[in-house]
Image (cartoon, rainbow, N blue to C red; front, side, top):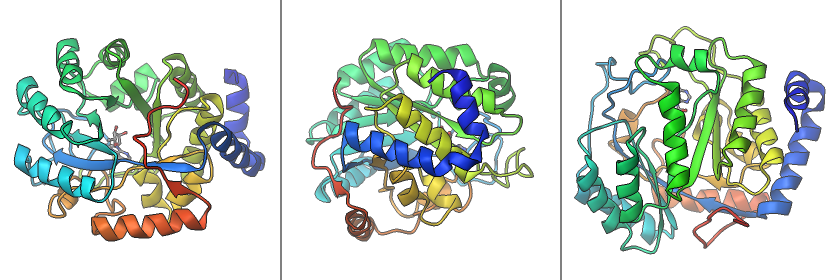
Length: 328
Ligand code: 5AD
């Protein structure tokens, strides 16, 4: 689709059912009915950045900060592996405590298990990304958040849009599967820029795209801003599926947070991935990027069983594979 076509669909709410059905068909034809589960471990909420929307931004002094040791991380990995997870996602704030060698040591230990490993630890140097890759990391998630440079700069004080792009390019060059994505509903975000976001995903040939509505956090400068619209976020996701047919697309936690059943709706509108939180239960409330995050009290075993049942009820099954991008 070209930009104009995308804008037309995003601006017209009379054809939403058609769009969601079409994305669901494209999903089924290209990546099938299997859902890939990714076990998410939030291993540090310490962050040096100041993203205006995020509850973990460094100026937020009300967060009780934590960082997990290698042993604690590995214990969560072990529990996830025992439950059958085939991908581990390590996510954190931008925490320099996990310098390159320390991170590589953790990566190597995790790769002793038969799992794919995704990192989501923010902007690093080429050399650092290279070291992680050589240590065994398979994938990296780094959302562009928005491709509108002006908005990007408003939302990310002291950060550089160009560096964000550089990171994504480096990750591609190094042979990672690269995940990116955007927020939907940021203040001053336009439909045009959302169309550009989708075209950007295509242009960089992203392997995974995560899209979520913006949810205002009370301890951030955006606390009084309106929440992003679930249906608009879903439309951006569905259009992403149609334009990048064989990639992996998660039904994001933010979608589940603002609409009960949002995750299932997303899985029926183009998504094929779920990322259950397997972090130690005490840490979860402290990893509050936005409020009322879905799933923070779920027991990981029970959650997986219930999810499996729900997925079966909509005709889907849990994959036993690592779930790399199809046809690459
Ligand atoms: N609302 C929704 N999503 C958010 N993120 C950060 N803060 C918020 C918020 N307030 C998303 C960002 C980031 C991902 C880990 O969480 O897109 O990339």
